[in-house]
Image (tube, rainbow, N blue to C red; front, side, top):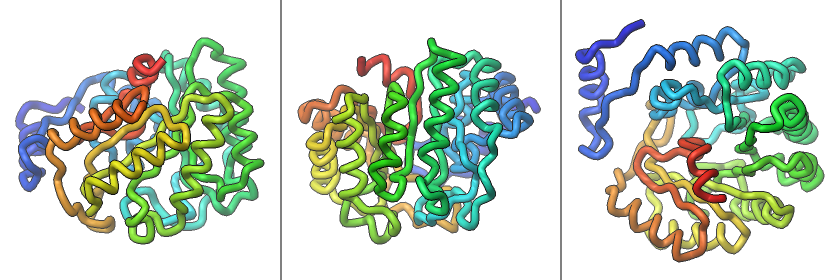
Length: 296
């Protein structure tokens, strides 16, 4: 469906409560619809749609998508997240093959894969991740692979099975500062996520993490989280503005000014991060291929 300038204007006007730096037209193109339709009819899912990512129009218009595996229902219920919570369906054994077929069809050079959290599975779905990476390496050896993984319940053997596949980037988001975990990530453990990143870094992998701001955190808490990440081997960091997906999620406490994002980026580089991608609309998988190239 074509979208004219008045359609774009209405979408911008619907966000009139946003500060000026967060107001922008939505990107539309024929390629965007092609990607969206292909993913849908392939029986696949993207976190772009399920999480209502504000960048999905831009990414789809460039033929880029982040695949969401193991269903669209999460066993956890983080207060910031738009993904459905409940009892997940069984795994689709054909999903690894669908991912490979989609990567070929869309001519992807960098494949980003994430998932819901599956605490109902013995290994949290780690072996399923591993099977997809293994198949991608076999069918598309020239493609780089980035995984954005859950914590697998803190099970070392589960994480090990993923690390053994040697993804080009191992991403695990901290999401917020330690003080806010009880309100924002009630079933996650701050130290457990840091340990996961440390183990991945010790394995020789490029590690990445993301933080949202605007949830009530203080500047010194963000800097402390960044320091913790560096101390645990994280080399790439993304920082973005939390935007409430719907009225069912926790409200935004503050809209962070672009100057503050620049401050965090500068501080991160001084701490030794290879790359800090910090800005209002930055998300953990946003421009992932570009960030990887800059970080090599």
